[in-house]
Length: 360
Image 1: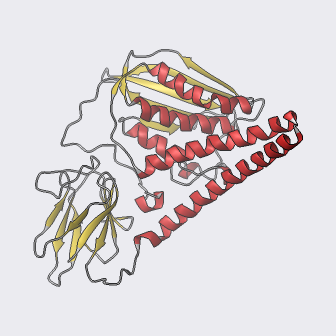
Image 2: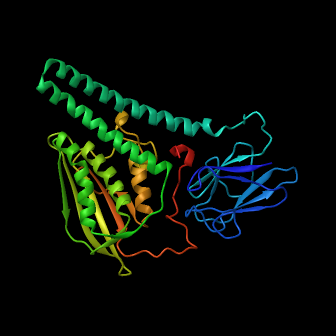
Image 3: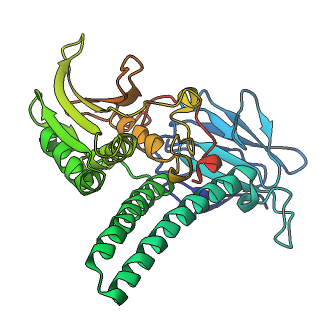
């Protein structure tokens, strides 16, 4: 019997058996198969049984669309064994029930996009571990020689790669296990300063100046403090790494705005005086695994930050008019948000990457 297994999303691990001859609705309405994915529409997609026992799927004009193997479908699509179906943040694996030896034409673990993503992550981790190994070897030699100066030279290499592994781990968790935004009142200046302080030891080791300038605030801001902290941590890390050692400068400016409807917003600008964004990647800046850092970057930081900010109904953009380095601008609504149970979370992506390609 055919089934859908959830291989990514809030209901990870759940398996749904599709009953013969009975169409099924995917979504968050009471008549649909149960889902806690807030990025699904209430009536997202419909599964229809075929006469030969197979199944077809069609999108029901959902907000974020329905994708089969990463391709957004515009008309009903016949499902094949091993197909991956994405609705919102949920990734389903379709099994037609005919495979008895555990083999399929399209095993989910062998999808080319997922394999490439795993290879890129493994390469990033390997480089960080090599950096740790080099620093540890220098410290080990220093201890054997009782040479404090040699130990001082080895420690920054260890510390720098520990920072990178910590940031990569946070981003991998954010991609693999996204969680709903939990808004509370926060003093926005404190959240920004706390994130900056987390990065300050890294900046100090590179002799990069890091400062926070709170120009104005709209008062307490309703947001998820941990999520914004994570998003800013990525932006600060990117800025410090881009700034030149000993002469680099990173500045975060916070100010309040009011839009045309009179609603308050908070704006956070993170800028550095580095070389700016490589023109070769500007059109793909917010795609996963795209990085201008070469072997030092995983390409997850910006996409994770954008997802976290967009979950607040805000956005983060690259300021192309800034010519003295790089400036990333975050805008978040400052007032309390009242979620409509009929609405999905997050804005419509312009060209969302397949989940498998994001290692999630």
